[in-house]
Image 1 (cartoon, rainbow, N blue to C red):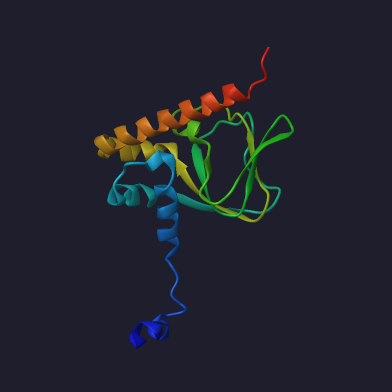
Image 2 (cartoon, rainbow, N blue to C red; image 1 turned 180 degrees about the vertical axis):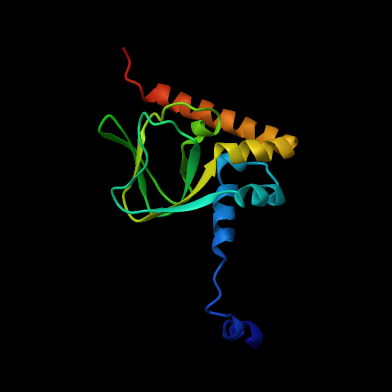
Length: 162
């Protein structure tokens, strides 16, 4: 028993999890990568891009064509439409998934509320990944369809009744 009590003496207090491992874990925990193996998800995450934003900076603007989805790695974002804040996003949340499917105008503006780091997944990189790993790609696309359907249902329920 004394060994366990003093085990903390042998732990390196300066060891931290590698930043890429943190990003990988956050992406793995999203609905987009549900059911994807750690190796396949790690491979996809190596193609993401970190970006940093200061409070008040817009990641995406309503009406602009979307080309990437963003995962919050640190900080907080707000999603706004027509001058109203719709939702606040924290670490592990992601936004902009429709841009992974097609070139359409963004339906909302996303603004950094605090200093923010995001991990961007760009559509053409997802398409390239899917081309070389079709089975995994089919699973990701199924997950994406389920996610979009769930958000559509939630949006419909939030609409005021006529």
